[in-house]
Length: 503
Length: 108
Image (cartoon, rainbow over all chains, first blue to last red; front, side):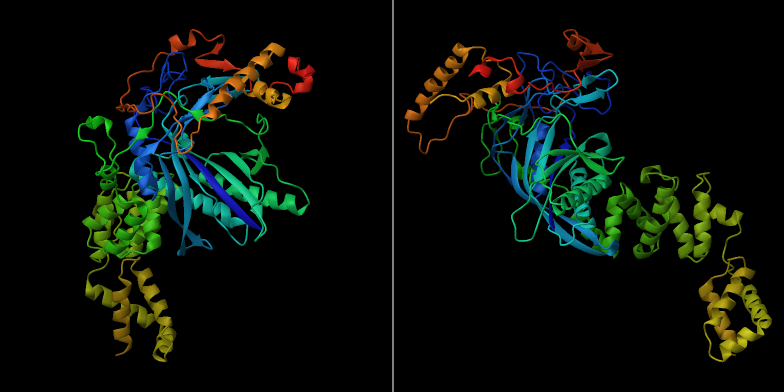
């Protein structure tokens, strides 16, 4: 069986006002407070296009390797629903603003971060379109409450990808690929600033189109899966739907071309109610909006008002480094592994934190990265904190790593200090080291005496080592460590012991 | 060439019009015949127009917040409201199928 998955992704543009009106864009405002007469579809109102939304769409199109249509058109898509007061949605069905792009993303093979494979999904098009309002279903009173804040014209653009992901084994793989692609898109949008793309706040919505077929045969009937609220659920929903279709077909059933909703609690997809057969949207050109014309350096008109001109080349020149470029630069600059760069970019603010620590410490970046990804990040995860909320700043961590680098404390001691620092009581690493007496013993004579004492007390082990069993040396090192309460430098101890044993 | 009952039924569902009587349907037929005259013009190689304003410049607005915040005014015309929400039925109430409807088309 060959599963085929396509995605329709709606991302809310990061802007102050809406796509077609001057109402504010804000999360969680009182119902219907961010609604203008146009948003409420009152007669006599007209849409006025927001320049910022156009720029965001162009930026995104360029970042996704699309061809930007210098002339794009707006259309009306008609359907009836309480949260769509006009009875139609303004979209770009015929000629959208950007087409034919691609998105590269990375996948871990067998869940091993060290083995990454790069895949590409084609982008069919990017279009600007309105969002509808929000309906709250009140089943007890059998009514729907409509809030037009979101609706009515939030700058929204939709990104269509053509079916991707042809995989031999249809189980985990496809959901994972869908999730990885969306994750990368999310990072790109956040880097560009065109959308904050936070799924939990409804800024990114993903609908999945899923079908299965036998190799060599035509594509199967596809279903559309909606109501996916996180990237994790996206993977689950896609995988479930693939399985469901395979089982259905293997049992001699058929797949209906329908819309299904993902039920997060049950982990399955169910047919959506309220969908009356095939929809006829009666697309027609939006008569209130002439074509959207974009310019580039060559076609720039001489006498036009600067504020009315969107220059594709100007936007292109100002594109920031995309995540893939950022990762490559991190690997090159700091000598870290590609999988490290993924982990850094995956957590908001972590790259910056890492670079700040590197700047303030003599410890090599290759060693620092271990402390950031294995130690700091796991602390943050344990306490459900973001990097910004970390009780340990980059300055303090750098301070601690310097102590370690100068061999004033051991690695074990450093971890103890970090645990103490995490309490956020304002003590410096040095203060904690002194308080808990964690300094490495610097006095050679003292160390020497302890080593000698251990050797004297372990006759059997000494004989074994002299006979050639060098592994036993570790036991002696361990004993010295115990004796010094972890305050001895194991490398130094090993040298001393070896020296003594060879005499 | 007449418009079929299926098409008329489809139109009634989509646009919620009610063709009401034979005269209504005939009016539709006449309108189609009238518009069909357009086909007599040879438009090979000519781009269709969207609107007579299509060569105007599409005005781009600056991204400033200039309106909204008029909840009370908006809700004034609402027949039913709950707190500051508009109230609507729980879902679309679909037009019943042709057989079950009391429509002129039934007899056609």
